[in-house]
Length: 140
Image 1: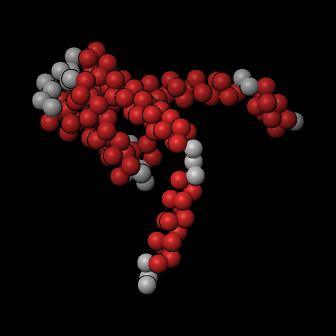
Image 2 (image 1 turned 60 degrees about the horizontal axis):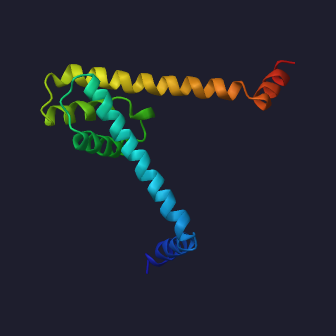
């Protein structure tokens, strides 16, 4: 009896998902998977450059597990600390030589990449004519 309203709400939500065109749903899922594979490949490239002996499948696995850690620690901004511990534990589990140094260099590289993309995004945003107009009107 108590579960009837939540189950009815869930049923309504699933009915909305059912109305989404199948091609749109499958393309969204496909793009999501491509994004996850790209993040795993990025991990593989970074770790290869840092001479961490990690295979592509291990890099993909590492990204999947660390994304679960990020979700579990949603209350910490950018999962700062939890993500790094996850990388360290996984690199140690994969048998990487000197996992402390490799994890530190890897996380610094990943965070630096995020800062670069944030900077590019802010540059693009503030070079937009609409943003420039709003910024100039605030100064007056």
